[in-house]
Every structure is written in structure tokens, then in C-alpha cells.
Image 1 (cartoon, rainbow, N blue to C red):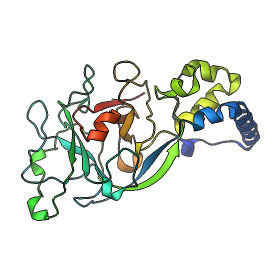
Image 2 (image 1 turned 90 degrees about the vertical axis):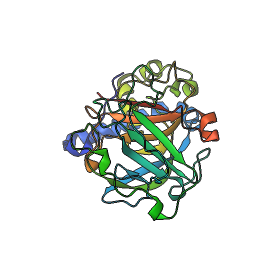
Image 3 (image 1 turned 180 degrees about the vertical axis):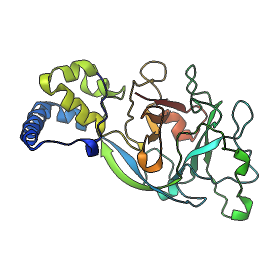
Image 4 (image 1 turned 120 degrees about the vertical axis):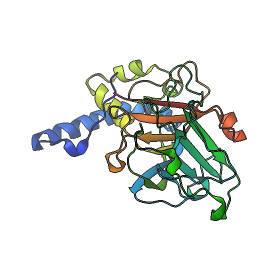
Length: 285
């Protein structure tokens, strides 16, 4: 089934279509009623990351910008020895607590700026060769001990999916399993195509209603994809969504052709705060 991403602002709905849409919504809700309990059992909390462009502080949760980085630590480099750039930084002390996630410390995501696929390894999505995930459990509070000049990254000629630095405003919420997530079948007892096929002419409306809720920037919950979930077979133990960053005009974020990026971890690795085996994926339409 094709995953359709709508831009409501660009849609001009004629008045006579409004009644038809309401009737369709009522029909969809009626057909979904028997499955509400199944989907509600899949509910997970997550933190939605609203973003606001502008300069950020060293300890802030952010997308792009300069990282918190102690001088005594070795800065991450790609396979060619070139410094990588911060994609996102999460200060767990500044966001609502999620079950199983750290309650403090700073988690960072870096990708190579000299790789036209933004550090993605199609053969091994867990090999941190051109991307890196770093966790600082103990935070240095003396800013004199932190790197302040990141001009050595040299991003003049670079491949990077985000143009604007942005502060993060976290909001805790919850969501049902998404039809794009490989765990959908575990909760519904049916393959995705079979589940939505039973709704007949409402198939596409119901699919899009559930799928669209999962897009955007977030920590936790379920992942969205524009293609398919790479965890279905080889990486099926990576069930925890560490971070999702979407294409977003507000921060000039573009993953290929309106794509989306995800980072996943196993529950056991998250419990141990071991971020050496994180799965990184992005895809686009």
C-alpha cells in the first residue's frame, strides 16, 4: 500500500466535498470500532519535538547547531577521518520522562557531511562508520572545559539534510501502533494489506488517518517510513525508537525527496545505556 503524505495547507476543499468527507469519516470510524481495543493495547508514550529556529545553548536539546562537547573527549569522525556534524542533541533532564529511557544525560546523533547518503550504510545499518551516537551520562558544568569553536568541521562544501539550527520544545503524548511499523501485525493479528483491505472503499482513508499521525520529530512511540520498515527481518530486536527527524520546511530539513530519518535501539541496550549498536535508517518517496 502506498504511503501518502498530505499537505493540508495546499489542499483547497470545495464546500460540496465537506459533507462527503464527513460521511466518509463516520463510515471509517464505524468500521474501525471493532479494532479499537486491539489498537489501544498498542498505545505507547512518546515525546513530540516541536521545533523553533534560532540559536541554542550548549546544554539544550536541539536539531543541528553546535553540540555540548567536553575538550577531553575525542570528537567523532567519519571513515575518512573527517569531523562529523551534530544532527540532534537530546538533554534528558529537559524533556518529559519516558519509561525505559534515561532520566538524565545528553544523547547526541552525528552524521558525516561528506557522504551523499547522510552516513547511511545500506549493507549494515548499525555500523557507526559515517554516523555516530554518543551518550554523556555525567555532564561537565564548567563551560571553560567545553569546546566552543566548531569551525574545524568545515561545512562549506557538505551534504547535510538540515539548514537551520532549531531549539526543541518537547510535549509528551501517546499513539497507537502505526501501519508503517513492522510491529503492526503483532497487535492486529493480520498483515497490513489484509487488515486495511477489509475496509473496502474506506481502505485508503483509514490507512492515511492512522499513518499520518506518526510523522514529525519525536522520541519514542512508533516509527514512520515513506518506504518500508527495515526491521521486519534482520533488525527485529530494535523495537525502541530513539529519535525520528522528519522533513520539515520550518527548519529547512529535507531527507532526499521529502523523506524521514529514524534511529532505533534494542530494549536491552537502552537499559544498559549502550548506544554502540543503534540502527540508523532514512528513506524517501
